[in-house]
Length: 473
Image (cartoon, rainbow, N blue to C red):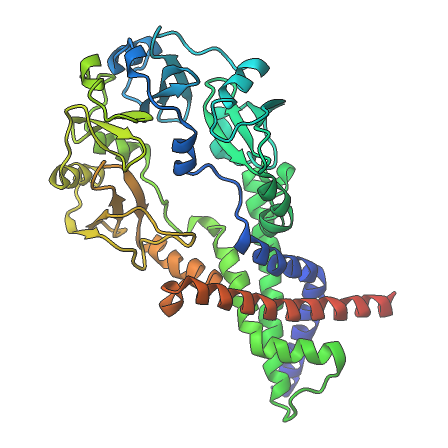
């Protein structure tokens, strides 16, 4: 038995040493880049930014009804999204199909909008409220900030600089002119030592989603094994009666590892789980079949007339046309909260009835209106949309849907596995749990302190690994 214990200790030592040498620099980079990400997030176009960049609807210039637009587009089914909004100085219908494909038609002539050239892209960008000295920067198919697959239906882009103090650049879809993304100089600079490093988000690798996921899972898996073996060895050393038998960097590595090794283990483990290995965690959005059942109307028809559209609230920047439970709904977006308009209405009862069609055979177990965030409806970067309607069903996955009670929009879907992931990732990786979840300042302090301890452990480990390699050389 003693011989087997000694052999196990030896393998733990060797495994920790060489796995640490292989992954140590990456762990240092993870902790350092995570601190950067606390200050600067990855570029994304928020709904507030999209609304701010949209011009006020010129409804007097609209000549086509929504149904006429669908007919001109040759739609065989009602699209996933149908929106009336400005495209520069002209109103246009923007159509998103269930598979993500985009179309845009002039709401005045019914013709497809022309592809963007340099001059037309600059003209569209000039309408942005931050535009100063607009410059077209040329075509882009895929770059560091548009690398993920969600941008595929909009490719290629024209990249346009606004010439403002923030160094804002816009990505406009060549096919439709749709604004897909905006970035600032600060985001572009700080994301290289931040999210790009933290997520191993190099464009040639991230463009191949499957390969990227495998690389991150394997690398973080080796780092996790190094962290676990080191944590075990740290306590084995303590059992010898002395605080630490080491000196210098080795002592720092040992004592910091005992004090904060659990931080490294939980951070790396939760990061590994964030890659959803083997699809353990369920989807966060309803699938196309669920959305179609919720709409209750598949035909490419919509009854709104031009005089109905003219009743939209003053200052509206977009009108969204949808079916919910077989009833037509027009939602106006503008300076205030989005709300039904143009003679259409929506009640919580109608939303609940329509939502039941998304899970045939399941029974609604509870319908709850949330007016404040809770453990499962939250946003680490601010306040989530409120109020929200939570519908809990008794299907085998224990599915919840979160819906906007004003517009009926489906804001999220989560099942039992997704709620487990909330604790396995957010609670472990960002400390968003318990009292810290209600105190952003305290949570930020705790994350910074934990990351600093992780840096001490990982940096001292890299120094020791470097010395070992030099001696072997």
